[in-house]
Image 1 (cartoon, helix red, strand yellow):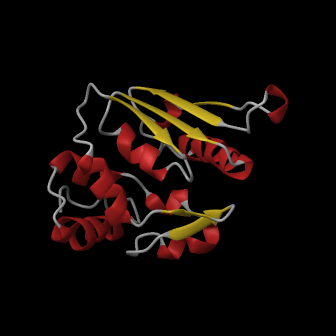
Image 2 (image 1 turned 180 degrees about the vertical axis):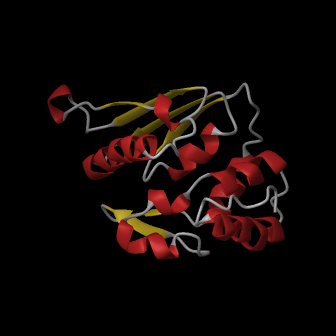
Image 3 (image 1 turned 135 degrees about the vertical axis):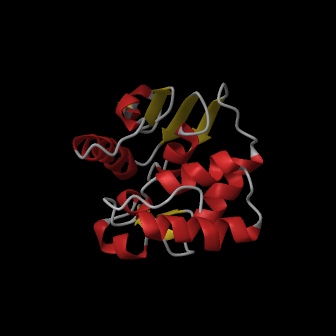
Length: 165
């Protein structure tokens, strides 16, 4: 466990257990990645009906036939790119925004693109929901823009974070 669980956060113990049992034990060792995984509230990135399963070692449906990757995969991919605080990252396929939120704690800028309208809307709503509850971290700097098919491209979520999601 990287940090003692926050007693005011009902999911802090679950996240700490997730990091220890699913991520560290499988060989992810970058302390920044482990801290990021422990700090991002995964239950807020899944539909309400799946929130009780959010910290399990499994992908979960997020709509439009897509899934949020299991926590280990998110951590593994985050460590694999060897993120530096000065890096800029382009993510293709925002999905729920969970990987984006994790990356935002590791690099200076995250750019992410999503073409599924339902996921675009959910990511935008999630940003405001988190901000209202004081849990946004860097998510308050998320900027979302969409384009429509009349411009010749599918609806796309373009998120730019200045210093993180």
